[in-house]
Length: 145
Image (cartoon, rainbow, N blue to C red):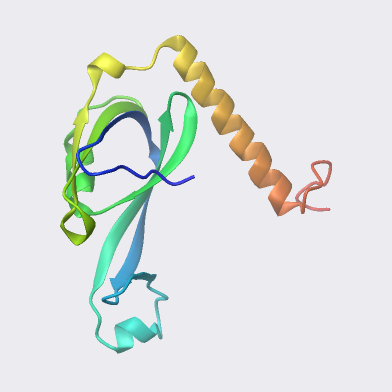
């Protein structure tokens, strides 16, 4: 499930910083399209590439995917942390192409031991599901077989 925040809404979450990945995309005027790399038709048409980022959040222990742009990434990098799971507050300001997000560390929403267990359980279940998908639903099949 992808995170959707309405204008003016604030969400408290725990972000898994180890899950952050950069994705190159092109804005075609209608929608955002993945950059296909060498031979990409959008690159050949000289449509500028922009970096988007995707990360895994946990809201009340449930996993949610989130895609965001450069400024939230800058804000995330500025948040002091010693662990990969960091409690944050995300506020959406604006609408459509003028949307921006305010990101800050949220000490008030720091996960408790129970929340960490919920997150660990959710992460474990995700890995099981990925393993099953790779083996076409057969959880007894090994990588070699």
